[in-house]
Length: 210
Image 1 (cartoon, rainbow, N blue to C red):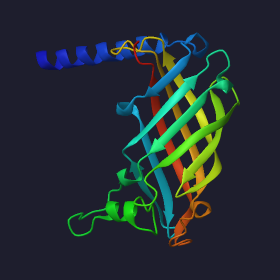
Image 2 (cartoon, rainbow, N blue to C red; image 1 turned 135 degrees about the vertical axis):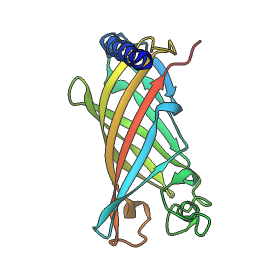
Image 3 (cartoon, rainbow, N blue to C red; image 1 turned 180 degrees about the vertical axis):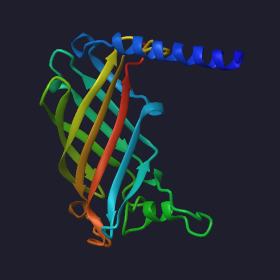
């Protein structure tokens, strides 16, 4: 019983701390201006593509980086840069000892062809605010040697001038988007493997000390 009560007490304290943290979030206009870097421990880049119309095959990139030049007075003037390592593609394909499907995706000329194109990059060209916490980021996506414009729907989740535990100025965002992979030269197995690839992005950016 004593252990049960202690567990309940700990859970209550954690919930109270979380609620207090939410209530103490900083309005974006009050955040420090300047460059923010990606908090890689709180970031994910997932994509999904149709598999014969039966299901959506999902995978992720595990190595990517980004910087955000944030203008709190006018968020539309902010700028975002992203780089992705295509060799970091990771799936849940079974029996990797028999077939390293992740390596095949990364290296095959049919797919990411990372030997010839070792980096995927995105650089914003404009930000259009749609509401206080939503907007559209437009930018140039360079992939497999081709550069084309892409738009991402962005949701601003919140900010801390001093984030709990780290004390660093931190911004959090979610983003979604879609690209037609054949437009960048990846047309392998279209249409059995879908041409449209959906992106799901979760990120936090922090401003380094000093």
